Image (tube, rainbow, N blue to C red; front, side, top):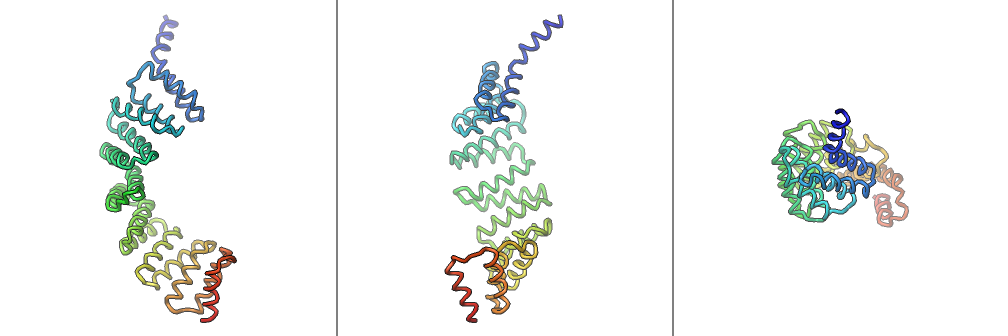
Length: 273
């Protein structure tokens, strides 16, 4: 009796074992063997959404994006496990669309994923990133997405960093400064954030505040040549020629720009001041 029970159970769970073995092989980069196991599982249960999803994932890892889309489509079509799993299927299909430059379709899929599982704020984060850097440059929607993330996770310094980057590259420097400030309040050791806040003040021609931010950045990281370079530039704009020389030379030493003729001319200019 026990032998019969074991044998029946082995037959019943054959698809489960094949699927699990396929996932393990895929994680070990044995993609050919993994696909054989996925096919075994799908031969037994062709409409299982998880089995279709796992095969799609293996094909995606092989950069076989068009075939991966077929199985992501099946996972979505056959899903019966609720909105959370369905949202995950959509989120991976949009990544596939992104790889083959079908930006309109990936935008639709990520919005669908968010509508199914709006509390997963990391999808909001990636949504804002993709909509920021996709060909459409939809800064308005990017900001809307990142603001949704901030509502869900108001202590996430990365969210504010993403927001200031969007605002900066959309030339909204005043609002970018607010986002920089919030990011710094959450994570004060970000030298690059001070640099970018300094750039915003520079664009607004507030050279005193740009100088202050570049100095803060340089205090956090004294090995980055850009920080003393922009301190030099801010001091130059403020008319502090003698003081500015020190920082230009520091920047020059850090980057070792011996072959840059333009910067040699800047050195001659400073020596003549």
